Length: 576
Image (cartoon, rainbow, N blue to C red):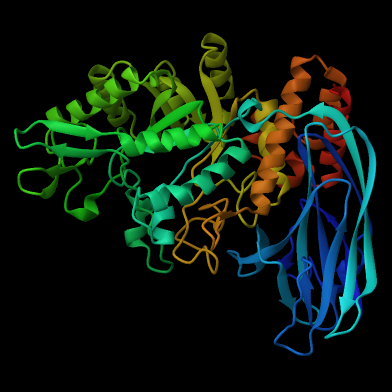
């Protein structure tokens, strides 16, 4: 067997089908050693890329494996590392251009490969908070066998690791406000469990844990039926996806006509998120800027209300479900929700959230109505129209402008920041722009840049609209409507009820880490290290010029070594 293998940085993304970018011969040119840097309570990652001129099965475990194809030889990867190290096959997923790109971190230990195929493996060391700083060495060993033959060592990768004395804080304390909107109804649908049941919450726990590990700070609460109108999934013809989200609050009309509100499901989800450090903000969707639902026979169930809110209610006397039909009852619903958050001491964390309002007058009318009905609420808005920044600057407590609106209205945002220092400022990307983003086709250094840009632009964090908005068969094909592949999710559903993390998840994790280092260096006055780090990774430092510049190489470094060296410079300056 002619074995080809080598080590690649964690930002490497294998592409099947594009032989100009990656082919079996190119694997041979990869180095047989790699250098990594890390702090305490940190991770250090790289990839093993492997190919052969004969079919093979690649085994990442110590378990035996016999292929159904008797022509396949066995290759086994063994780990000799100074810290606990995990290995994951990287799953390939079809992209917009019909090439397959590496993304998901698979839990299966064996993957089989045809002759001249290429596989990649994610290798990650986890460093404890009490790790000793210093220089470490480790290695991966590749063994070959066939049938009942004795294994033979056929390859090695040497790993050099520098551990610095800086200890990374836990996710809840990293200073980066990451807001990834959650879609729990989609999780229940995929796994076929009753919505808001114990079985649903057992699965949700695993997903919430992954959100907490990434450093998410905001809980998504759904307070009305289908507030995003399923992202238009009822009109999509080519690729199927059910993206309707349902309320966490149940309503009952008693026999005497009064309304009863049950917040137990909502509170259970809020409490679950808090267990994993997701407790800075409670974003309540579905009360303002509800998306148009005319396909279902009418835009509004309560025509005299200024927004298209749909609140389902069970009539106790008849046993029939209906919707609240008057502004009076919707106001009662909103006041009761305000009262609940007040009496439970959560009101300061609650934000009534709006997603991309397009009509200034309609949004003002809806916002003013809720302000009069429930004056204790604060507001959070994902803004994709630059004029909203100045128009609603005094009303919105959490700004989340689309990245181009952040660029174009940067001076105005910084003016609000100076005038209102208690407000929170995020930026977001969604189905565009191309750069930076977290699409399957995006470069993984985009994830690093997202965190770096937040620090450089003096933003508090980053918002992304979707974490688990899967198409109907996400493991096979995540193409859906006009959305670029990967825009719907950052994780895939695992068969065991746990999420499969992705290279994009890991890249964003690293971007958050870089934000923490940059902001800590700024706070400690480490100006030389700060300047060195920014100089290594930023190709354009004039934010006004970023507005119309979507050329990746002209705004950020594409060399993973630059990011490693920036991280090393910051870690060295911040040693405890």
